[in-house]
Length: 411
Image 1 (tube, rainbow, N blue to C red):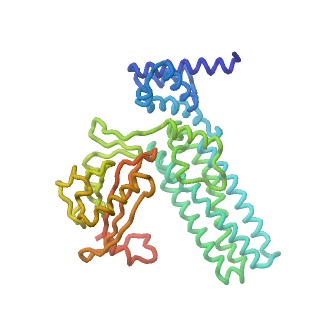
Image 2: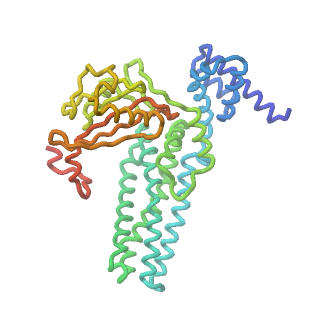
Image 3: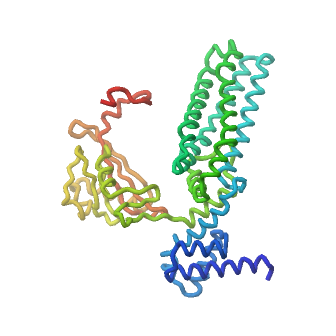
């Protein structure tokens, strides 16, 4: 046996021993400590191999599943080791810097085009600038990942500066980019490209390059100092949902995220404090109830066996609901003429053929929108259906944009 194979075999035996002790009552904290001291790192495939070995030795699949999230803690502990150094492939800071190198290429191209302003046809100059500005809009993913993932974690450690100052600078850049694109289509830009560049493009380039300097000399060093490895893991988990700027997701990041998805499954639970703990936050039962009752929609939940289990109780319900419908088959809650349509919707949901069905009607001087939504778990198993109902009469007349509050919103 080669040294590498022997090392892997020894590590798997250590991991197997820890998992067996977990199943016998070893605490999670003691398991993590033991894992860090004796094994150090592990991949999802190694966890899978160890679990298969335990199954081969007689441990039931149900027993393995029961502790899968505890096993995942071992994987997260290992992953945290890779999040200690920003130069590690897949580390969020490393990814941010890879994006910055591409952003710099774009601003360099803009500088080069603007330097040629006296030597080229103005129409061609403005077109080249506009094309580059359109490309630059991709910077949005870079900024949103900072705003939505990095800044909130820094705030947990009392570091408020980035979210108060840098976010404002992001918005200044967004406004500069928007204005530069808008004025690129105006006749004045073609008549006097030098003035257009001085007024719009040059300030934009300066701010974008300045932001890169602030990130790499202030923000990222401070973040590495203040954030813990598990914080970087949290950022990594959600980066995919926002997207990346000018780069393909690093292969190492893809592998890590796939490992996370396979191993880290956060199940909802009720805590000892009677709070509902969900993967995206924690709510007190009273907060959850009043949140659902305050939504400007009526909600009714029907479980996978077509039984009504819940309805929201807001003050202005469109259709009457009484507590007597709880536990009743949904087919019995509709007039005979509607039952066939209800059956067809539910059958399509259960078969996976549809995910929602929409209807709209005039009812009691309201224009009512009704959407039936299939509820599925992470494995696409059908859990039930939500009926969402709302009066959208006031929404139909909306036009343009409303970005700020006005006085009547505050009185």
